[in-house]
Image (cartoon, rainbow, N blue to C red; front, top):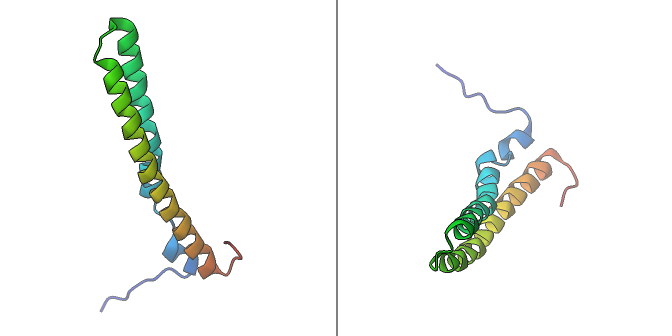
Amino acid sequence: MSTLHLPTHPASLFRPRRGLIRAAQWCGLTPALIGTTIILAWAATSSTILPLLGALNVLLGIALFGVGLGLVGAVYMQAGACCRAAGSPWP
């Protein structure tokens, strides 16, 4: 018969997922990397389509800002649950 081993500290039940933090970081990094690539390509080639791609990248950045904000909110809520379970006066 096997026994179920649960964490002894209640805070370990609500530890924020590192993947959510990484995903939020990539939401900010992706448009920056794409934008840097576009502007370097434009400086090298003076192509007429690259400004359009830059504008589309701005829209991508706005959309990913919302996604990243939601991910950070989820991490914030998980961290609050963690500290409330441990009895800490965290908002």
